[in-house]
Length: 271
Image (cartoon, rainbow, N blue to C red; front, side, top):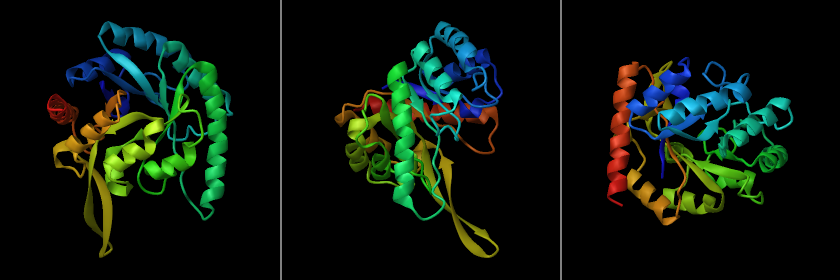
């Protein structure tokens, strides 16, 4: 399993600086955020992605996956094919889609609508030799856990439509990790590395519960069990570190990520 870094927290950095940060954190590659404001973005992906990959390859870094904007859920605009084509031409096989938010009654009708969109994405993915993935994001999102994600992807070709399991989010709204891996096994193609806690706050005198990202050693995820479940399922895709820590300096981000990486490497060494 290759250890890579989700570049969401490196917004505004150029290609070279992005690569230096990932190397300095002890990781092997990038989960590249192709979003507005990043060195590779939806407006320049066709021209800039090949150049950026060459720079990172010279640094010894791989780019096995791309994370698209949160609203990247429609296969019909020209940009959708531009994105998938650019990834396919660059040899990047895995592409994380955006999110569908549950807002009103009519769950199954909305599932049907999402599956229609995935039919379009599957056609594009097959054409360009890539795979799109649904991320298990907690709270009111379609595909919030492995079971719900399978409502969306079951029956599609797993070569082109996959599931991106996120144990951090699963610890909030998901199944036990071995169950989640088993549910999604046929479509499992990506795994996020993050940990969360449910934290009680107050607003207007009333309790409010929110999820907060914390270091891997402190969160709800049992990472030893998670890695063993992935090993037993013969998962060999990337592990992408989501260092989305709030209100930290760049130096603190580096230190937190290096510790998270050391923790996972230590567990992997004991498998």
